[in-house]
Amino acid sequence: MKGIQDRGLWCTRSFVNGQWLEGQRHFAVHNPANGAWLADVAEAGAEETTAAVEAAYRAQQEWARLPAAQRSKTLMAWHDAMLANIDDLARILTLEQGKPLAEAKGEVAYGASYVKWFAEEAVRVYGDTIPGPGPDKRVLVIKQPVGVVGSITPWNFPNAMMVRKAAPALAAGCAFVAKPAAETPLSALAVAELARRAGLPDGVFNVVVGTDAPAIGQVLTQHPHIRKFSFTGSTATGKRLLAQCAEGVKRTSMELGGNAPFIVFADADLDAAVEGLMLAKFRNAGQTCVCSNRIFVERSVYEAFAQKVRAAVAGLKVGDGLEPETHIGPLISEQAVSKVAELVSASVAEGAQAEAVTDVPSQGHYYPPTVLSGVSNRMAVARNEIFGPVLPLIPFDDEASVIAEANDSEFGLAAYLYSRDIGRVFRVSEALEYGMVAVNDGILSNAAAPFGGMKASGHGREGSKYGLDDYLDIKYLCLGGMDR
Ligand code: NAP
Image 1 (cartoon, helix red, strand yellow):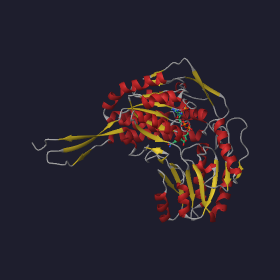
Image 2 (cartoon, helix red, strand yellow):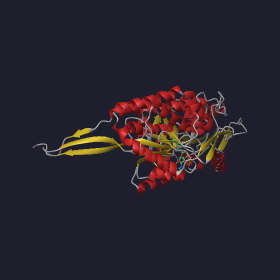
Image 3 (tube, rainbow, N blue to C red):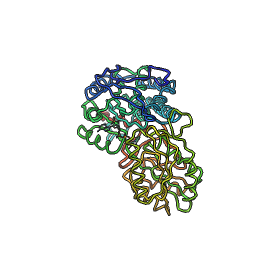
Image 4 (tube, rainbow, N blue to C red):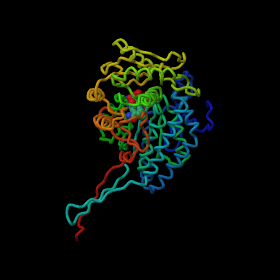
């Protein structure tokens, strides 16, 4: 159990209708820090997913009929259980995903903060009354849960990406079927065990784990009982799943890829910008959708900024996430390492210069934190989501040109800018075609704020007062004969 205190949280079977499913076949989960075997997990596929959707359908109406305050109380119990078990949840997360333990704890606390936020929002689903078009008419608007929600989430935040969807869905009165990534199923299953302990009724929250993602995805996007599908992952997969949802005209939320610009103007506090950049670039070894992917630096401060960045990167310690001094863990797989290496080689071939931290473990899926200077916005490393600890520096000359370059991307998720000129801060923030803009800050996500993108980064918002709307249908009641 690799140091897990509560052995009941080490779960290796799908959780459907309040039961742990046995499986004929199993798949292995490995630790990316050293390739060590962690667990054999029972394989679920289309059949088990269908059973989960049908259980959710049976459970949903009763869950929705409960007073909102009661759903809120159960969600709070789930939140409290997550925090009470934060050490074990973080350890499971680091073992299967690789991020440093302190970051894993941060992710669990972050995921739990959405459960608390939506437990509090559950009791504030207000409707409207609208002046009618004539003396005999009254117009009322009510909001109702959409029904059964299917979700698919990636390996980079195996706790928070799933919990961030389940919390608003359950608060709204929906039932939920989750499919986490096959590389990292254990975090979602541990959270399912805590949902069971917190008293979520059977069938309201289900987790199916398996390696046949297309078969599971087919059910979650096309089963007639699915009313809403919520996805976090790559844009390529998201497009495919959106097309599948189109057949049944399902409601969708899509949290897809990013290619975040990080813009440093000459008037910025350069030390603060370096500090923010280190967070925005290297968290989770550069494997976040909001990672700064293209670092634009005004030419007059480019050299000074590059020097500060090189010094900060040289101090990074790469290693196993369970070691307390580790800043940067492994990438998720050898394939991920190769993809990053190819992007760097292509940029070097086009004229960029690479400087890397040299002290990297020889075993495990590690890529050295690398500063790439002399990059242009046309190079492969700037056109693609890097998803690794590579920091490309691109010089720019003026505000108009950097806005044009920053927006020259199919993606529109997160952007960052550093400047002390308030007029520029507003002009540039408003001109950036991104769902989220961080100003003089390297971390932008929290439960009170609407997280989500534009363009090929998707649609829908997670967190904030807007997050519940993604799981509610608006119904209008037209009352006639009021003047008789
Ligand atoms: P991915 O390949 O799209 O996988 C994400 C999920 O989709 C996994 O659970 C995967 O299952 C599943 N999947 C893959 N192919 C499928 C198919 N044909 N049908 C049904 N499900 C399928 O993405 P990734 O590379 O693992 O994750 C990283 C991506 O997620 C990046 O692009 C990142 O920017 C994005 N992301 C976005 C946000 C956001 O909020 N916008 C947050 C985090 C990550 P298996 O793993 O089991 O194959």
